[in-house]
Image 1 (cartoon, rainbow, N blue to C red):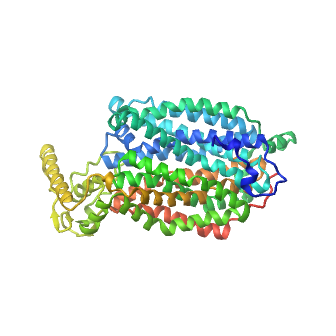
Image 2: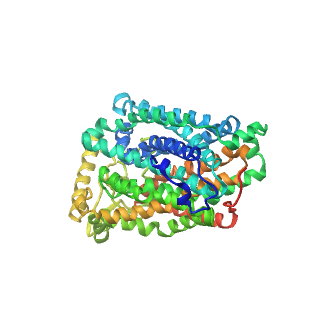
Image 3: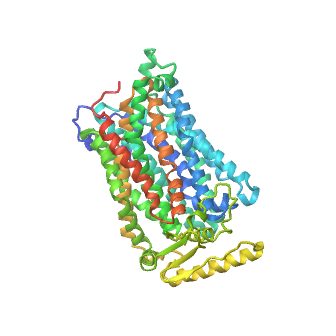
Length: 560
């Protein structure tokens, strides 16, 4: 983004030369985009470090539940984003775009810095995860007000025939923020070593955000208020009740709902599948070490990020709708083969073992618990089915289920059958010893069948993994590149900040933000590492159908 000031926007856009991009317009794009990059950097650090945060803050529950809890805390920041959209959207439509996103940036930066100072679960017990969730909620509220302000601010400075292109730079900010976070994490990991990083080094990227906050605030303070808002204010047309005008009027509320279900919810699940679920899938399911995972994702992001601008530019030519809906359709049709190819190339030994020695759990389904314990009360050590599935889930082993009513559970690994211990009536020590012996036997059988404990770095087909990740991120650029221009063009100036922010943050905060949590809970409950993909596939498919028939095209609209 630092090179933006040197870009000849008109040459790239291919549009007639009658509009020359002014220095002020370039500074608007640079300042808004760079500031938003830093906010996304703050927000995404948590997602990158979910595995480490599980150990630091959720060590009081079993490992599978702890990881899902860590993802749930990640999602908590997304859950409150619509409320941030309402609060700050209202302020932005009444007071102005610029001052509102200065406030959101301050909240975001301070919350991120404090995460780096939090004591762990081992230090203060349950207060640690509670404080972590509270800071995530503050981050979510701030981000709920940030995006709508930045997108609206840039769009209101853009000429009608370049709005998709101008706002596409805002669309790069989430990926660039993730990329910046990846670089910092990789750098600190390399500098201090993996063990030190897991112990204390993970705090450094959060603490660095204090420096980024100062730079971001300075950049934002150099900008002027948007001309559309300034004109509206001078004419006395500022809305006195933007929430009422945006959501109590059926005419506007209908557009809010269409934009949510016909564009944003599909964009959200494609985005979070391509950039976050893929990362978690590599590290948790395919057992690729965290440093390698981060590097592979970073390379794919670097290669694909220019496509945000490409598709934003293209949307000024052929429209927003066909690009967004095509991205949703391609994702829904190809996720299963792409993630299977990811498995084959990232951990070929695991992929081969699954094919040659598939694991099945034969059990009475009525006697099996769901492998997700929200309060950490179930140790999964009293039923043979739970003992079997809990171990496989913790080991990250994919398995299929065979119903056998009225029987105790057994695990079949290729041709080897292992029976979990019946622990009913055993004292705690005897129960623990029996389960440990079973786990040792099962682990040995898995190793004998070719199941690796970790992915072999030398065996990873890195070019192919990067190529697959690139395709996943390319889908993200298709659905996300034109979305800001589309949302801005759907709503009138006096309630634009409020109206566009709510569907955007419901879609991305709820449909997208909860995707890793829901998907991994689905995997834990079924044993199939690909089962979680049904969530983004179904949502993207529904969005394609609704958008095809209900979403209007907006790219030729004036927003004044």
